[in-house]
Amino acid sequence: MTVSSLKNAVQNGTLHADYTARCGVNAADADSQDARVLSAIDAFADRYGAERDVMLLSVGGRSELSGNHTDHNHGRVIAASISLDVLAVAAKRDDGVMSVASAGYPVDTVEAAAIDAPDAAKFFKSSAIIAGMARAFRDAGYEIGGFDAATTSNVLKGSGLSSSAAFEVMIGNILNYLYNDGKVSNVEIAKMAQYAENMYFGKPCGLMDQTACAVGGCVTIDFADPKTPVIEKLPLDLAKAGYALCITDTGGNHADLNDDYASVPAEMKAVAALLGKTVLREVTREDVIANAARIRENCGDRAFLRAMHFLSENTRVGAQADALRTGDIDAFFSGVLASGASSYRYLQNVYTTKNVAEQGLSVALCMTELFITETCGSKGAWRVHGGGFAGTVQAYVPVEYAKQYVSFMENVFGEGAVYVLNVRPEGAIRLA
Image (cartoon, rainbow, N blue to C red; front, top):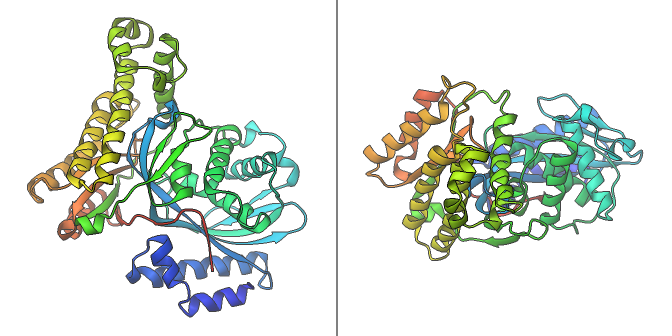
């Protein structure tokens, strides 16, 4: 539709049903979502012209529910797409140039030739993601072409909610609907997003974030064969169970953490290599215990502990998935607490050793434990969220205490630090 007709549709409330049914947005927040869409429409019209035929697209962020740092060693995870999203207004252009104007950031302009090969000088730049996604689409035999897009996001960067993965998937979503009639599966788009991040953006990562953002809902993913991950939707109705999913952004400094993140898969794979395997999914707990002395001598104590975390966490994910299938929320929460404890003690991704004076995640975990045990009668659960080292913690709080929890945590971390989220039913989609 044209820019003006899309704007009219939004102003008439036409998209409210989509917001709630497909994006997980509360009905009370539909007007706020309208305002975000209208800002993207106006940004597109101002930069690219008001007479264009456009599409409106949405991709949610994600919350990791279990399986902390397991995907990169071919493990299992549980994750959910969330009600915070990246919105894009996009239109074709015929010169092969891809231009993305993201609210609050400089415009990224990628020439057609830039997709041919990764450029190390552009590592960690969003333009590299755009080029990498176009290359992945082309290599897979799909159509690509130029486009203009204006995006806005409330998936906070560095929040552990996967703003980068949502952006990657959004570029794939744009190419999918502008040039391929939406026929590319969201699982394929997730794999392409991982390729773009690994090869063009220069950051090693697993496939969990991209898959959760692209597929939507609550899912368990088994990466035993990363080329064909097994994805299963799981029932998770937190509101029906009487709980709110709360994410606290501790505001930690993410600068210079790439080495910390990279050390986790590297140390896990070093243990696997010592035992004659490629990844820890191919190793048993008994193998690691029997070779503990050799692992400590050759890989270090932390690598041994991280291997033990992986093996326990991978088993735990299976048990938690079973709990969700049967509707046993208490058993699921027991796994959440065990996952958090293992991440803190064995995976050791709650703070960086480069700056032990800054331990925002430790403080948030401490305060959440205090609140849930003393105010909620120990009903609920909490854990470190996402990659760790800085960023966010996750808590399941009884609905009747959610507002009190928000106030309690924001007294420590500042106003606006806590997000009360819904699980988003659908992943990468076209709206309107």
